[in-house]
Image 1 (cartoon, rainbow, N blue to C red):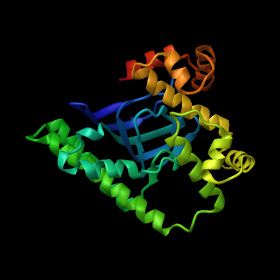
Image 2: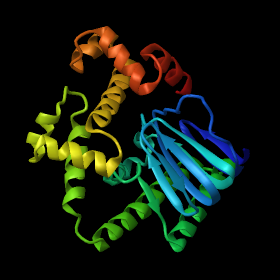
Image 3: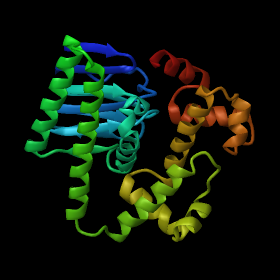
Image 4: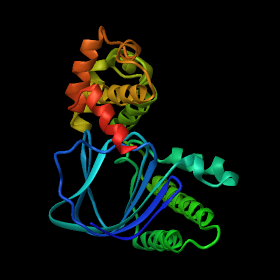
Length: 284
């Protein structure tokens, strides 16, 4: 890939990438401790791979990937893309707008393709112009350019959140299956730092265990256990990177021993806890 414009601004990275053509690799998925904002302006066969799914991206697609999500952006055979992306910490957004900033970041639904929004042409063009202006500011470095870029990121987040709300209001009521799925995912996401069983989750969300098990697999293509195991390993990785020992993590997540935890971690993440920690620290 060729970088048209690139600037490292404190902990921010604003880039314009032309003719992105990187193919899928066998390397581990990437993990960041910052938010990643991504806007596809042109492209064919562009994909982003997460631990449990791969999403096809098109021109006009906007993504907001929160910290700690493992992912890889690549192109299929003959594919290419032109895109803008920004890396930022929520705490670095303008202080006078911090409450609004965090509210916007929290509003993006975690069950909609990892915060993907398919923007209509008019909105996509507005976002493109905003990101292009931001990239130019970081390249030319006029006075107070860092404040301008922070404001531009906030503008992008606000515009996409407004559109997401309008889209949600225009949609018909959710089917009973999607209501079930939303309840289960929201509950498991918010309790991933605790031992969870299907029976406990079923009681909490008001459905029978067998009904959740069948409908969850039908709707997502994954079993309930695969889903909760992945959430557990995300939480485990966060604990490990924050200094907890494997024994402490094993106990916190309800495993009988460190050995059983390590086996489960390798099965889900395809690497041992030590290997994954080493890789993630290289990425930071």
